[in-house]
Amino acid sequence: MRVFRRFITALGITAIMGVALVSSGCEYASKIIAKDKLNQGAILYNQGRMKEAQQFFRDALSWDDKNAVGQLFLGATLVKDYKNLSGDERTKVANEALETYKKALDLVGNQCRNRDNAISYIATIYDDLDKKDEWREWILKRGEGECATKDIQATTYYTVAVNYWTCSYDQTTRYQEKGAQDPFHYRNMDYPAAVADKQKAEACATKGLEYIEKALAVDPEYVEAMFYKGLLYRQQQMLTKEEAKRKELGDLAKKISDEAVALQQKKEAEAKKEDEAKPKA
Image 1 (cartoon, helix red, strand yellow):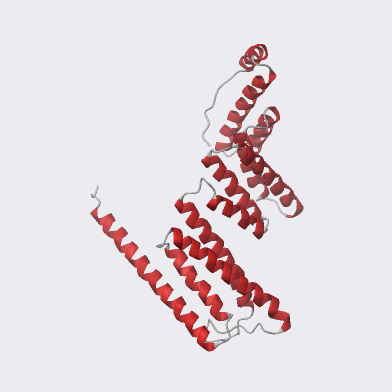
Image 2 (cartoon, rainbow, N blue to C red):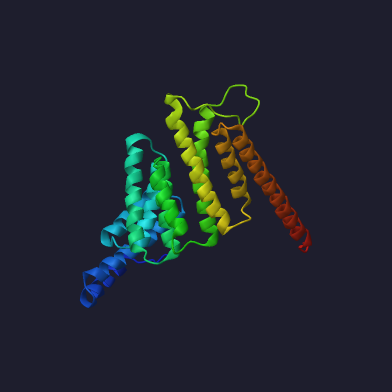
């Protein structure tokens, strides 16, 4: 969000307002005042003076609440605010930031940069509030929206897949046997008190593989996604009791991991070769 400062004296503002009221009415005057306050707030924002900047953004929006850039700037200051808070006050300010970014999103139209900014922040805020379903909904809006590049699509699917892997890993780790030689040993979660945890772990591993495949469909050489594909098969291995199936999943996970390592080494060698070929200063 790049803005240019316009120095307008109080006398100048009065003159502009006078012309505006005669020619275009109060609405035009309001937009002029809002733009001036927004510009002043942006300067303070770039100087790191968040509290002062926030007040200018609030003032600007009091004159023109349909200014999308103003909503984006205000949202950014609110995010910085709640990250330094805790408890109910943190939640309150985070929710205000959410509403501010949603207003911005309604106003930006097809401006991809601003749409991506708003959606990214909305997803981040939901993640900070530990609302995983809402986080996932909004991050997928970013990855599957009209403005999404191939890189954004692949990264989005990968991020969702990693989140599902974490969900499964958190459950299987709780049932790991102390001192077990095999880190991928079967997790005994078949008794009544553990069944719900096992079902959650299984569901998360399945969804994780679904999204990791989407990431690899967009970018077949996405090394990090390949590694996590192997790790998700390891989760399924830990949740499978039958030895034959466990071996099949383990072999598949190792094969994918080896392929990822080979691809990573190939990319590093190519990057090194390109760097060596560059003219030396």
